[in-house]
Length: 170
Image (tube, rainbow, N blue to C red; front, side):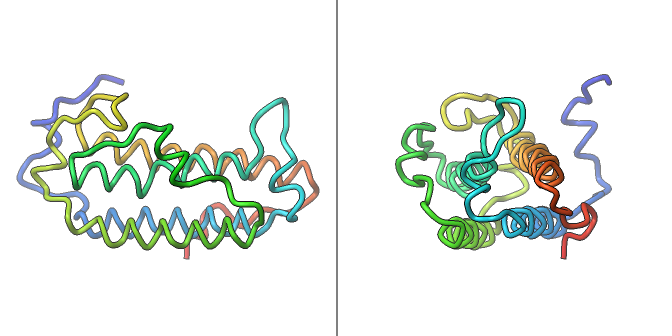
């Protein structure tokens, strides 16, 4: 695929409003939450396939990107990933993980309206590591969640558990 220049992506017609994009992202977060819920408590923190990380570890990566990423976009002050890991340590129980999931989802909802269309087109260095357009970074946060959720689907199937329908984001 050929990379499209930003000017080609930001014509006068809008494919998706910022609010509609947020609703799509929240749909993904609802589905990922269902995947967390589907795991037995002990397997959430211990089971993996082929040497990959546990689903609790994958969920924590998603948690550590979304709200902290939007906070950095809004404030233009970036924490390092080490600082984010200290702010969001892995909780000991599934209930605690789901509570943290809900807290960070609420933070995403609160931060989202503070991001202007102009800010989406700016270049920033996310977490001091990844330089690119802000909209690209947000797309990466969502893509990363989808990727790790798919790993969770594989884990659930390996455990003999039917995952939630991948299309049901409500």
